[in-house]
Image (cartoon, rainbow, N blue to C red; front, side):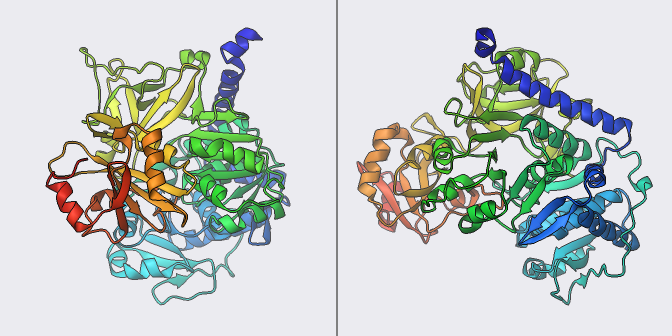
Length: 603
């Protein structure tokens, strides 16, 4: 027992069991020629046709209901000439119709490009062009973004259809399924689906630029759903509350695909809402909730209620729960299990933290000494913050970090292993090449560059540091935006904090700046004292931008690119600004800006 505890053998065994179950399950799909992810839904439907599969805004759908509607969509797609291997762009909200389209496409061997419904203008047209599709199915309730770029969309060769409601739009043809057969689609359309065939295109969040289309294969969808089902003990008794967008892999794969594998019920929200979240969970007897990004912080910031612990939730699982939120979230809402995980849509490795107590709270994953000795496919490598390049030794090999030493996480690429095959980005060879490092630790190997700075402690817990490019240097010191944000977020009157570095003419490196959403009771002098007391002097933000709300992506990640581009120039910024003048924050005006850039102000 002592050795098992010391070496964390039970935890590593749990991880190993999940991976083995996923691989064995997938191999059986290969043997039976049922790799296409739509088979997981059909197998469950055959076993439990009348079981409740989906609840959406008070309406219930059985597995058989979804089967029929997705068959109608598939038969309609065939009538429009959509063929196996083709891509159709879906611009749709969280609605049953999203699932009907997704399944219908997969059942005929085609693929959906899941377009972020928050996009508009150039990011939207870029995503549509990247999809290399000629058919666009648009949610009838989302006409404006498409209408605003209609000429460009039509120039790409798109035919536009609308689906999911009675609304009519002059530029889109309504999809009418009333006379379309719900007969099963020929299995020949999916015959010999390969491991690399696409189940969906899922786009990156676009936090640092235009979205890229990640190629999500049928093998990856199957393996992910099987692994999480095993690791977190999902079953047909679970009721999953999904308020995350289905155009993202967390909601689509770790939510919907897991439900298809297990026969669990999905309670689907149109979008995340703090005000309705817990009421919907209680009303629908939810057992598992999903989170991503800052969702848990938003829930914590809501007023406390006597009903906070009145629910049936056994687990919250997702990624991006910050350490300063973790225990407060668990304690306030009484959720026994937090299943934090780390993965990327296009990446090749995973980390998991099956967390039931204070030990390991805040970690994005765990691997004991046994797991690390058996699996060499996940390494933290030394990284140069200034050049943003991996550091290599005299033999040209990457250098693995020691315990508690931060570096970039690299995950092994192996085309023969469905858990480590790199699918990359659709029609983007340049972006693919930037994500792959060759001859990393030995000649001929390949690793995926995650672009994330992590560290592993001596116990085997992995902690997130920063995205590559977010850590910056000031006063010859490295400043981690994530670490600064975690500290400042604990100040009582801080609602939300976004840290980034800005360039100042005549000064080396980048100066720290914070966009902050604060309560009306905020005292900035007291806040300055708090920051100076709890952070190294070089990490304390020199500039404050008081924002009414934080701009986030559709997957609840803070946007920084616009903030960085506007810098600390008050002629470009409409928000009120402050600057650290000695021991206190004072208003930052155009006159102060001149003093700073001329070097007359002490920074």
